[in-house]
Amino acid sequence: MNRIEQRIDDLKTKNQKALVAFITAGDPSMEATRDMFQVIEENGADIIELGVPFSDPLADGPVIQAASQRALKSGTTLKKILALVADLRKTSELPIVLMTSYNPVFVYGEDAFVNDAVATGVDGVIIPDLPPEESGSFETFANDKGLRVIYLLAPTSTPDRVRMITERSRGFIYYISLTGVTGMQSTFSGDMATRVGEVKKVTSHPVMIGFGISGPEEAKEASHLSDGVIVGSAIVKLIDQCATAEERKEKVGRFIHSIKAALNGS
Ligand SMILES: O=P(O)(O)OC[C@@H](O)[C@@H](O)c1c[nH]c2ccccc12
Image 1 (cartoon, helix red, strand yellow):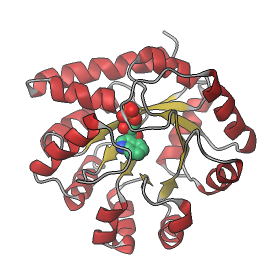
Image 2 (tube, protein in one colour):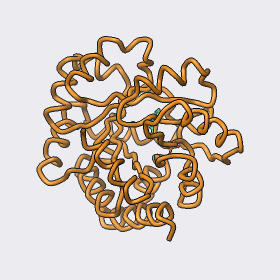
Image 3 (tube, protein in one colour):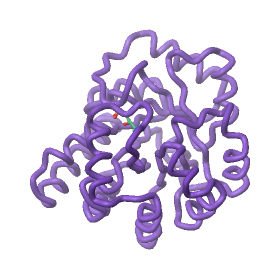
């Protein structure tokens, strides 16, 4: 069992839902990411999803695109992110998922990336532009080394695809709440309950809902249908709005805490 499954299991025994917090690594600096990691962990997030900045991403909305630009400007690379993970692992057991486009992985080398990710303490990866149809070699290698490959499902996924993804996704299944890009305001339709229900019917693997969850209320609502929620743009936006490192720590900490409290029903 790796850290992701361990954490989700622990939550299940406590009858709680998971909070997955997404930030872009290196936005606006590696030092800030180190601070944010700590604050996010301290305030009760269960899994952190670190975005690897890339100039031409799939499905990233304006907030995360802008964060990627800031991170690239500050000199962030996949190598530096892995070095940061190695460092964070000295003091933290928080499950870490890397969200990256395939290109940085390709440039790094698939095998080298999987080896280094596992060695530094990464628990899982999400590669939105590497669908299961194209990920044969990468997935085999990752599975061999115990790196969890998390696949995405969308409202448009066909029943066949739902079956394939639920069988092959490791760690959890990422259910995209809406058709579109990250950071869009979502009003959850009754349809989402039906769709997620269909996914849960064919698998016992955990399902997390992401896209467009901007605060405690939406998080709570989505958590009723799933094993947990993923919040990205709302945190990234908050990071950008703060003028100082101190303000960032305080505001992001409070925000994470408020979502976790809502998930726990208080
Ligand atoms: O930003 P949102 O709407 O809260 O959604 C999470 C999302 O940002 C994060 O998981 C993510 C960032 N980039 C992505 C690309 C594809 C899928 C998911 C992602």
